[in-house]
Length: 386
Image: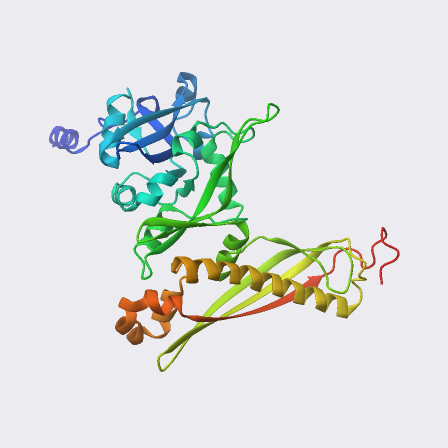
């Protein structure tokens, strides 16, 4: 009986016959895709090469391979599709391609204008690439972004990911991009990346500046930093912000830091007229006052609140003008707001949403509350404050 049980167990238990050692993997920490002159896809990857001592000491890898020692190299291959390019990449690598540690994916500008539907098909269907990896569109070829070595972080992937997570700009993942591209408006927005050239004292590095706008999977334009901030206000994605305003009744500047904010989209349909109200509420602290205003005076605080409200509205109007009137791309999720409140009307009119959206009346209401004027009222450095 015992012998029979042992024999059956030996058949059913698989053991570790299919194990893959860390030093057998080509660990990819970043990926990039460009369109070549002959219209092929060039896949570039940042490969982390684990040193033998590292693989012996640790059986697993932390995020961005922060738990071990090794070096990173960039490899590239071309193909008619992303899957084809990956298969060609595997042919020149002695280790098995592993996407599990990929933190960012960069699309070159030329490919973004041609269309991202095909590469996104691979990234969302393949079981290994991480859906929470951050995505970017770069002004330069994506391969040049991957070649950079940031001065502080371990790799360019970690640097870009942390800049996105700081939420001073857009923070978009593969999953979120796929949802936008397949959503009701078929429009999307992605952070825009450029390279700051080196100057001899400092090496070149990548940084986020503005955003790229997509419609039907293709890039149709760019937004600068101020316009992108307007996009973030409308999408309820502003988590951190420092705004400097110039009070109308005083000389100098006052800087305020955002504590919390909330954006609400309220759609309206009256007959054939479609409109939308945007309500924004923020709570802020004053962190610097170089003006001649005495912040212990309530009227001065009220004036600063109005100045910040006007600044928020101005940025939103800048974003609306570009996206609604020029690009006709609903990157603000207005379509979803109408669908949730008026599902029947939406289904009857969804085929003409582009026309409705471009003529949509948007009323922006901002309410700012300054919670604290800072550690001091009158500045000890400005005795002439009034």
